[in-house]
Length: 217
Image 1: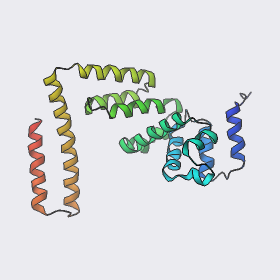
Image 2: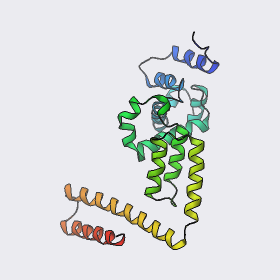
Image 3: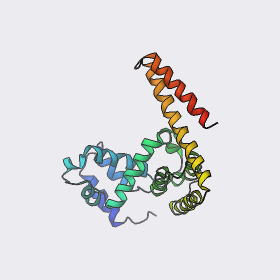
Image 4: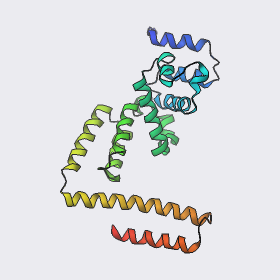
């Protein structure tokens, strides 16, 4: 016996009846029916709508009005979906491209709330790459829920703040220099492969990278 449909689901299905099934607008409504287990697809679609202002062509002056009236999602939730999806696209594109997202059971995919906590962790300057990498594993591989992830993030930040000043300084130095080396190495390789800069400058960049590596040995 099928479970009775909620009022919000019925409302979404009524809106879907008048829209071409091959359009993005229809797909978003379909994703919205079960966005807690397919939030990545909904987030991807909503990001396109927000970025390209497609909602205006559908008769809505503002994105939040569209998300609220058409798909029944509050502004706060819609923006969190956008931020969580964009974070994955920008910072963790490999996760979106992996087979895991496509093949994993819906319940095994991190919620948008958990990914939003991961986004906040990425932006905390007090945390280094190792801290973030470990935290990411907790969210992606162990499926830590948002409440637990938020609590653990608070604890981790507190622990880092309590480090000895000199130890904290050295930890930040190592993390910063390591990131700088990664960026310089990538840019140097691009400049060399595409012949964007004279070779003397490229060699100087290589020497700078070597000196930076000595700083963190």
